[in-house]
Length: 215
Image 1: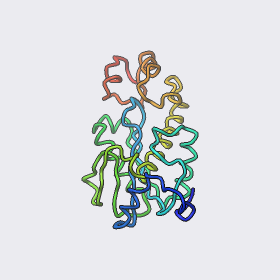
Image 2: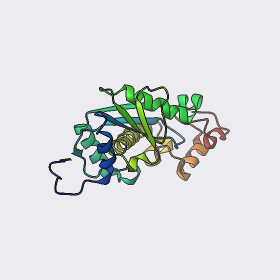
Image 3: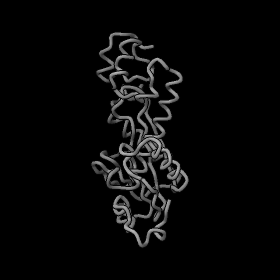
Image 4: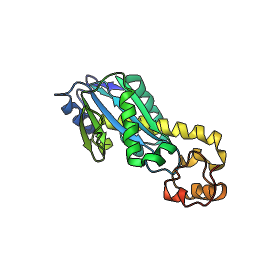
């Protein structure tokens, strides 16, 4: 991790520019993002991250564009340097009950509640949170625009992947360690063979169409 002073003679990465502009009028800026809206199994995990003003985390970008090994390194740099990090999630049963969009919003609300500080503004990837009475800026592909959102995307992805590795130990027949619950050919074949397990989202068509009892 570097500071603004360390990089004063270098070009500041563009992903930090948006956040710095926001800090002209808001001291505590929290980025929010989620991981796990698309999979057939496992939770949606959301993260809220308040980065230290003026800090530069080398390699910080959208988690989907970050190789796993680098993602882990960046994750720990975020953990060590952030002002506060909050994590929230919704499990498959809740996703089935209230739908994936509302589950995503609920996970984000829980992540905000998990913060140790109250942000002045929320920078959110793609959605808005009407139940949260904090000023919000919602943007499409926010993880490519805002460093705080990119940091939240890294935290959410790493936390969720680790959870899916744990689920692999409990349900080894589905090989969650490889596909993390996404609808790959291998995963579909596993569901066809063994039926859905307790962490599968039975409201998702590719799972619900299976005429096999849950394990």
